[in-house]
Image 1 (cartoon, rainbow, N blue to C red):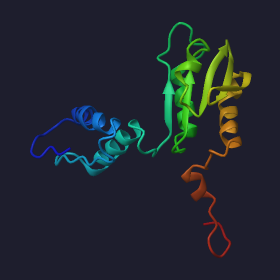
Image 2: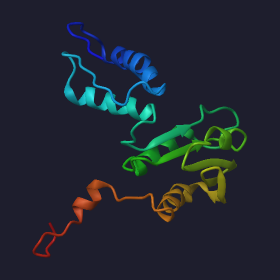
Image 3: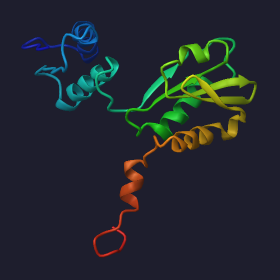
Image 4: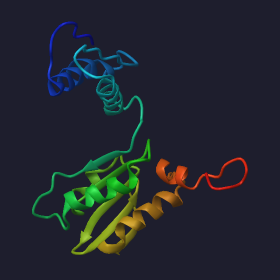
Length: 176
């Protein structure tokens, strides 16, 4: 998608790219995207391109999150918990995590996720691998760590880049 001399706002560029290029990609009529807009910086265009490809399920370059819109049945602060989980898991490309407020619609809405975090009862969380509940009634205060443990148990965890570089060892065996 090339927008030669037209000045376009970032939001409008994302909407146009998603509408026009995304529709073709989802229908299998392409295998990549290159966005060009002279008035936009390279990093924004690059990130938008990768986000578009991830949204079309063509390339996974980051962790994907699925969340319910929240309603009266939500059993925890969905925004707060989602932010906490994102902060601890955003470095896991190709992993899909669902964060659902209740058991009523949660399992159905998170059917495509690798892992699920679902409000099971007040103050308690159920964890899923795919569509299967594997741990029930976990205290809220322990649930995020339990989710991370579950991701590790299924060999989908990698240490964050900042942690790996912090504890790297140089060729002479001393901390780097």
